[in-house]
Length: 139
Image (cartoon, rainbow, N blue to C red):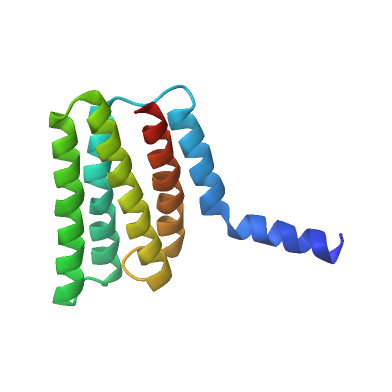
């Protein structure tokens, strides 16, 4: 096998969270956008994974880290709740913004390599970014 081909295969293998995320997004959004309630529930639940990972990995010990994670949870839950009370089009715009903001949140965690494993934050960033785009297209 050529050096170039083995390098490409290594790169593809190293990006397995991205490939898995693409499959999840395709399975979730290719047959239509899920109901607003499900999209809002996912937005509100996603930060709980960061709290769980942080607790399991011992990364929430500093009060500022825990406070930031709780603030993120409250912010994303608030966007989800407001979306549930809005008309369908507004709800889609709010949820797309919330999912995009969560992709930024994931990217920051990936860069910092704290709280959640890098593979998780990479996977979640791709899902959230592409999910936000799909939600926006459905608005």
